[in-house]
Each structure stands twice: as C-alpha cells, then as structure tokens.
Length: 498
Image (cartoon, rainbow, N blue to C red):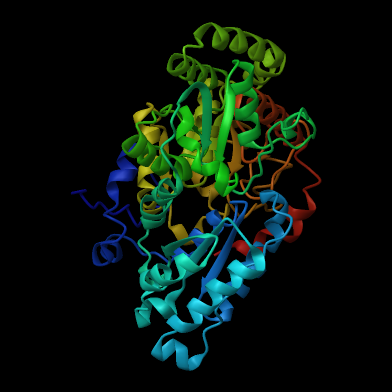
C-alpha cells in the first residue's frame, strides 16, 4: 500500500522525481484517503463518455445508447468537433430515450424493440449497447434482453456496462479496454510478418487496398498510427489491424498477427495484455516511441519479434539520415535549457523522453492523483527507465499561470526554458509568460496538426521528432524578441489566473 505524503502547502510547487510523485498518491478509488491527502476537484469524464469515445471509432458497428436522450445528445454535442479525427463520415447513435417512468420502473421492453429496430434499419455487423446511469440504477437485465434478441438479429450483440456512477477513476482503461479481446476470434494461422497497432485514439488509419497507396502516403497531416504504420512497412512488415479504428470484421482477425505494437500506452497496454493472455500474442513493451534513440529501440524490438533485424537496421539508418540536420541543429540550440512539460502521462512523457535525448533537463508538471489514475501507463514509462523530475502543483491550478512561480523555484531565467503543454489550456500572459519572452512549443494533444510531420502532441518516430524539433527552434527564436507580446498574451492571461 502506498504511503500518502502531502506536498508542502507553504510552497506553490513540490519538486520530486516521477516515481516518488506516483507513490505519493493513494489508490484513486479510496475516496476518503484521496480527500485526506489532496484537495481535488472531480473529473468531467464519466465511464459512459470514456467508453463511447473509444467504441465510436470502430467501423461497421452501431452504438445503441440505453439511457435518457440527454446522454446521446451530450456525446453528439461534445464530439461533433472531432469527426475529422476519427475519419467516420457520420456519427449517429440511436437511443432508447428512457422517459421519467422508465427511469423509475426500468426499460427492458423498450431496449428489446430498439435492438430489433437497429438491426432491421441499419444492418450493422455489430450492435454495441452502452448503458447509462438510469438503467444501471433500475438494474435492467441487459444480458437477458441480449439472450432473447440474439437469435432474432443478424448483428452480433455486445453490451458494455457503462453507467457513469459505476466509474472507477482508473477503471475505464483497466476494465473496458480489455473487453475488445472478446470480439476477437482465434485464427488458424498466425502470420510472422503481420503487426497490429493498438492504442490508436481519435485518429483514422487507412491502409493500402486494391492497389491504392496507404492513406499515410497520400496526405500531409500524418497521424501517429499512420507514422507507426509507415515504419512497420519500412521494415518489410504488414500492418494488419489498427485498434481502435478498424472495422468489427477486421478486429475479429487481430490474433492472426504475430505481434502487437502500441501508440498510446493508456489505450493500448490494457488490450495488449488481454490479447497476450487470451491468444498468446506478444507485444513490443515500448509505447509512443519519439526521438531517434527511442524509435530505434522500438524498431529493434519489433525486428527481434518478427526476425526482421536486418531490415530494422536499414530502416533506422535511412530514417535518422533524413532528420539528422534538423536534429543536430536543435540539439545545439537547446543545450543548457530545461523543458517544462505539463500533462499527465503518455504523450507528455514521450516528449520528455525525446527532450532528454536532445540533452535537455526535463521537469514534468502535474499532480500525483493524475498519475495514479493512469497508473498502468505511468508504470509502463517507469519500467522503460524514464524517471524525470516532477513538479507537483494543485490540480485546480494547472492552467499554465503557475509556470513563472515554478521557474523561480527552479532558478530558471526566461531564456533557460522551453514550455510545452500537452492538454489545455494554452496559457500566456504579456510581460511575464508569453511566447515573446519564454519559448513555448505548441504540443497540444487535442488540436495540434502540423503539415508534413506527425504532430499530435509531439508526434511519433523519427519524423515526429524532427517536426517537434523544428517547432522548438522556432519557439526559441520567437522568445528572443522580448517585446511585442502576442495577442493571446495581452488578452487571455488574466482570464485563467486563480
């Protein structure tokens, strides 16, 4: 059991290392211990939102929401701006639209009729039933409905219990994601040259079909999974399944691949472990490789799993040669600087590891409870040897407005820092913490896209490292002007001060 240690409340920040910060927090579901240890706000994402967020990326499937109408409306409103990420041309979720009396007395009959209607009208391969809080409280017997409806439907029926109140802080990753292995079927042949990509999230992946080039070869805004796929192909291997993002029919055959690789550890590691246990499929134990050393290490591991060691070495040599001028120029420019990286886990950590490759000092900024909520993810990164300094601040104030205080605590001048935020918001304030005086690289996980480079967060691979290096160098150049602050810094900063 972890020892609970409160940060010193007399300081804005407590600076420890990542491993220490991780073990400072109790189990995130031990609510009394959490309240005693930290003054925290609750999260905005419930189990229903997390589950919907992943399932909707699967093609040839329809989500049937068994809940009041507002649950579906919430997701359509919240996710409408992300259609382009998923590559799904139309995101539509029928619902049982539970009324007041059904919220009290249950709605199993209405669920049965909805299942039959969705099967008749949409003809999907898979119907995924997600249950909101109301049927969770009335204890609707969804299993019995599926048992009675399955012989009458063409589609396979699959239920994921997703009541918001049933949410454990880390339960989505550990409880829901492994369930995707239930959709898979043992294959008669395992192909030694086939590779799955797990952990894809909010990004489409289109491979070559019918003689056409893969999507990642035909557009300028490259996703992480597409860049990983390009590197896999460069080693003479074949990308078999990308999860989430492929169709239900394709997902069923995932065990035909010899090995799994992982982009986002949060979304990929739980499923990789489930597939290893159920089908014996091994996985490369290094997520989100970014930077020459990390990517080369990942490619060599993959080469060993598939007996493509020589192909891996040739690809590594060619990939590094293509980015070497940019990488070396950035390495020279960032010498002596410290990377301040805000964010809770996977992509912030991959950027930090890349900055270490550049010779920079790294300070991750966040809160122990954020680390604990993504415990499987953090434990993966610690297992790779990544254990940078970690600055703990009140989770309510992770707005960027704390950065000047952190810089003073660390005795860092404006020119000593490159600030990177991987979530939100993109804080700036004229005269104290603005792109005109402190280098700030836009490594937003949610919104950033950079033409010709994999660029969600810091991106992935050799090319992602080159794109991030270019951005860091531009940020350092911009911060030298010391005048004419940005419009964002002049108008936006005070709005986020606490």
